[in-house]
Image (cartoon, rainbow, N blue to C red; front, side, top):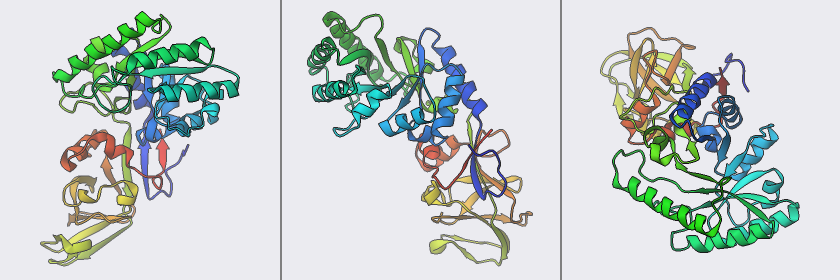
Length: 376
């Protein structure tokens, strides 16, 4: 954890209190359910370990990761809370996962067999969550294959190789209020749960979960025994049209590396897609697309510099971009804020997402390893 900002040309300042606030708010929306906070993709760009610790401090019961390497890093950092990992390729280090008490998602009989074999090597039962595809057509067993998956899980459970601890699915359209797919997926999930219950795989200790951030905030009927929150934990709304009181946790900023006066008619950056219309001051900002600032942000996205918002001038380069501040005072070392909570007049990640035709998830998770995370 970096504790000082001195000498950093660029940094992503992460407000851990904001993450704790957001997790507390999300827990309040689902008072009868446990909360799992997803910290995949380096905590959505906010930092894997720091984000997990903040979430647990705020009362999260579980942590979620996409890949096992993320789960292993959390265990190495001393995180002892339950961890669920859901992307398990055929050659995954399953024995290590079981030895480290990482819960595994399974959606195919072959994976259950591989998990059972690894459990035998580890000398302990693996904890598994069975995933059903209720309409997203991504991960999970289809409803037609679901009974066979449950049967195989029960068989290896009877052998003592696995313990079924969860039944789950994922919503495709929860961030589109009123979308008919929401009701259809919940109906399919309830059917899958009924099948599992009839077969004896849905005991009181088995956690049922399907709700993501959007469903946690808007769909009480989707909360079941646990909710899985991701982007909302970091203060970015899963439904941009609605304000839930979330506080964005990341502020991306940089120090101006160089300023210069240029005459009218000066072309700026590659291709000269921006040409100055007067004598003006340009500022060089040491962040580029190698750091996660999308190349097509040039001429579109705004930053806060010298007390005002400025549109990025010209194309974003690999390591830098330029701003045009006119006659306003700007010197090397001055701060430029690309996005943050918006409280100081700076753009937000959601604003960047809107103008660039993407989602806030992409804006924050793209911030690269060259940009230090500074925790407050």
